[in-house]
Amino acid sequence: MPISVRSACSALLAAALLAVCASLAPVAAREKAAVAAPAAGAEAWLADVTAISSAADNAGRRAAIESALAASGLKAERKPFAIDKREGVNLFADVGGPADAPLLLIGAHSDKVEAGRGATDNASGSAAVLALAQRLKQRPLQHHRVRVAFWDLEELGLLGSRAYVADGKDKPALYVNFDVFGWGDALWMQTLDEAHPLVAASRSATETSGIALNAGKAYPPTDHLAFQKAGWPAVSYSLVGRSEISGILDEFAGKKVDPAPKVMQVIHSDNDTLAQLDATEAAKGVDAVEAALRVWDADSR
Image 1: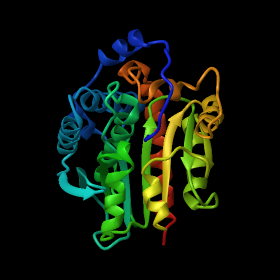
Image 2 (image 1 turned 180 degrees about the horizontal axis):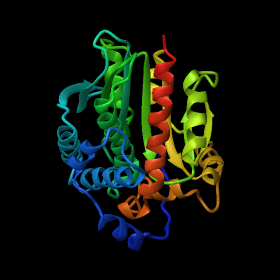
Image 3 (image 1 turned 90 degrees about the vertical axis):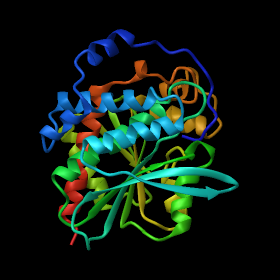
Image 4 (image 1 turned 135 degrees about the vertical axis):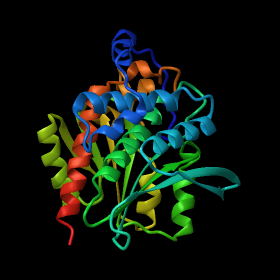
C-alpha cells in the first residue's frame, strides 16, 4: 500500500514460522489438486511468499513470480511501461477460460518499499494471485477468461496499474485486486457497489471458510483505485484481523490510534517479514475468494 506509516515493534512469530516452513512442499506440488486442501494451500502460499520476499530487489521479486507461474504451466509476459517520468515492468499471464468470454483480471502489486522484506506488503497478495491462477488454470471458469497481473511501482503511486488503464486496450469485465493478505479472521473487501453479486458470493464463501466479511467503500489506497477512477469495475481484497479495520481507517483519516493496528506496525517497516504471517488463515482467505469467484462466474449470463 502506498502510505506513510509509523514504525513500531510487534511480537515476532518466528517459532511458528519455522514449524510451517519445515513442512513446505515444492511450489510445483500445487499441480496435484484442482483445488488445494487447506494444508497444501497454506504450504504453497507460504512457499511463494518466501520466494518473492527473499529476492534482493523488485526485479528479483518479479523473477520469483515468473518461476511460480511456470511451475503452474503458465507463461509470464513482461510489459514495460513509462508513466510520470518513471519506468517499470508489469507481468501478465493468461490463465484460461473461453477465449471469446469477458475478461476477469486478477492482480496484485509485486514491488516493495526499501524497508523490510515486503512479505505482507505485498508478497502476500501476489501469492494469493498465484494460487488463484493455478486453480483457475486447472479448473477454468465457465463464463470468463482469466488473466493475472502483477503491477510494478504501486508504492510510487499506483504507476503500474495506472499505466495499464491509460493504455486502455483490454478493459476487464471486473478487476479483482489483492493487497496485504497475510493474517487475520476477516476478508476485507473494497467495493463501490455493495449490491454487486460478488459481495453476496463472498459473504457466503467466508461463512463456509470460517472467517468474516467486511465489505464497503472505505479502504486503504491501492491498485483498484486506478481502475475505479477510470470508471472500470474493480474490487480489492485484504485479509486482516476484524479488530484492526476501524483503527486502520482512523489512521488513514489522520487520527492517532494507540496502539496502532498490526498492519500499521508492519507494512513499510523493518517488521514486514515472514514472521508476521499466518499461512493457515491466508489459505482460508484464498479458498473463500476462489469460491466466491466461481459462484459469481456461474451466475453470469
